[in-house]
Length: 457
Image (cartoon, rainbow, N blue to C red; front, side, top):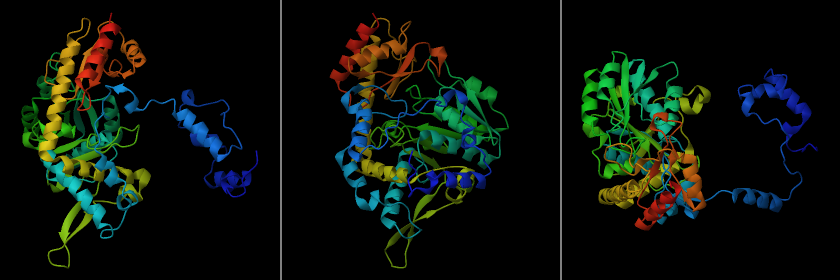
């Protein structure tokens, strides 16, 4: 293999100097943290000396094996949902003054800061909270930040989390809390899915920093005990954290009105396309309390007067520049891309307004309930599994039929089925999580029902 003279790191002597500098004998030592079972030990089939055109065709050929969500009928949600994105969202977010704005000092990028301030203001109105931080990567990281905030603000060492929370979020919460606090699950009622108040009271202690619930829950139903949960939590001197899907707030009571101290959620439904690991948008909101704001670890864009009378300026408040300067020691993380996502979400929310968001929420509620009704009429299927009111997502149990086999049948008909919950929640048996939004028509739902009727025979 020829060493490229303009890339010194590929030179053997340069590599040796780099390894000696960090005290490593063999490059393989750098990968010691990667478990042996997932390491690739073969020879990578990497073509050498290909032209740019050849590389492009090779990559396009590999990418063509993927199926675009627009190319099939999808009922998969679980954190990244299929919604319609108005053209104006892409148009404004692709403008150069937003797209190329990497960052800026306190007074150097007022247009970008104003857009982020509008995003914070609208999220704050949706969730009925005083303060909203600049966004983080996704709902999972936002929930991790939220429980860490609670532990820091209260000085307590335990977080109670609804057992119906997804394993992905639980994993992030445990990572973010580290040695700061322990995550303890609270059980749910097997009939309704609602949080078990009895188990909650039993597990509350003077060491409980906060209780985390979701509304709607991961299973898609609405947690109707929010106010009672808040009373139990606050009676113990603990904090209530509520995770939300923002479009549901077009119909549901905002968390701030039934006792939430911290609210987090996923902004992907607000004008962002589905993308694997891409356009996610976590947000964190809280009451205007010094103990909470100082524990966020994230910037807050704010508005202030300028030297010119009647003119406003936008800047940010940064509790501690740890996520940028400390990097690996930072208690929280964010990125440049999510700021662009937040601006897009601000465009979406301002375009729809309160009435538009309510209208979309009503449409989602109607269509998801029609889907549950159609599927429940099929012999061998129970939908939903829980006796509670649902929004957007719902559980579907297939009895003895495995979700893997059901989804294979659906794929052959150009349909992407629901998420298999059997690993995360084995007590639910062969149950999948289905999603229905404003993009699904009656014809789409009837098509799903017809194929499932054949699949369960």
